[in-house]
Length: 285
Ligand code: PDD
Image (cartoon, rainbow, N blue to C red; front, side, top):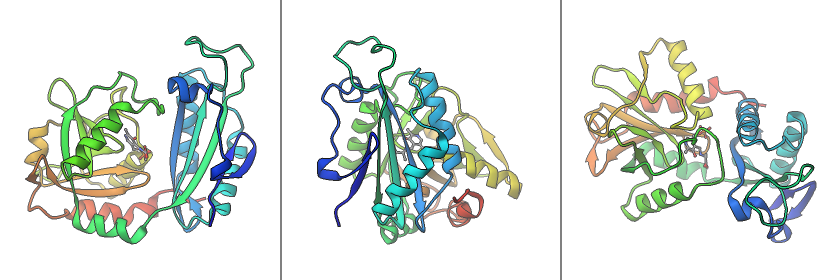
């Protein structure tokens, strides 16, 4: 089946889906993106993803190219045309096409918008969650506004590759105080020995993950003790459990940090329960 992409108002086979070489996303990473889970062909937490998108755009002073409702229509149509049952819808908006100049293009330059969707391997993902994954740690060398979901992801790309080369699934960034910020494409969590859930406070040093927000709601509802604060690599290595969250990986248990087993080296009870219960709390539309 040929995949279909939405590009600036048209649905095109992927091989014909092109952007201009002078697109500012291509030349300057001058754009933002969102990734939303698709489950049973429906969107998970669409409202929150679109709200975060609007915030990212506004922080970068890129106009929202269409209404949230119109975007929802494009998401659904792209999911439908690609026959996605479980997978992701990807959206990217850039500051548009203009002759190369670092400063903003002339007023009235239209943002570019691309939406793609694809199936992911559900069985593979469940197997990964049942086994748990390894993470490595490395210095956080990103800029100080990673709360904006910008397509400028070079440090994340290099970190993920370093993880792959060391047989790990994710890399956790560590700030200059030895505290974990987040993963290269996920938020980081631990469960302490006394059963408290810990994840870094959402300031400018992490992306405020939508999966993270939903998990926080689950914890509140279930009365589980929570601390929104930074934790060190040492604390994580001594934790009872660890896990990561993202729209495409959901709640994914971490069983090894820098080669050292977490807890008894198997996915923890709390992490597994959160993964199982997640969709009862997320919004499906
Ligand atoms: N990544 N932190 C970073 C750096 C991320 O890239 C992501 C998501 C998250 C988790 O956010 P959410 O729960 O809203 O997915 C945290 C997406 C999935 C990606 O780049 O593919």
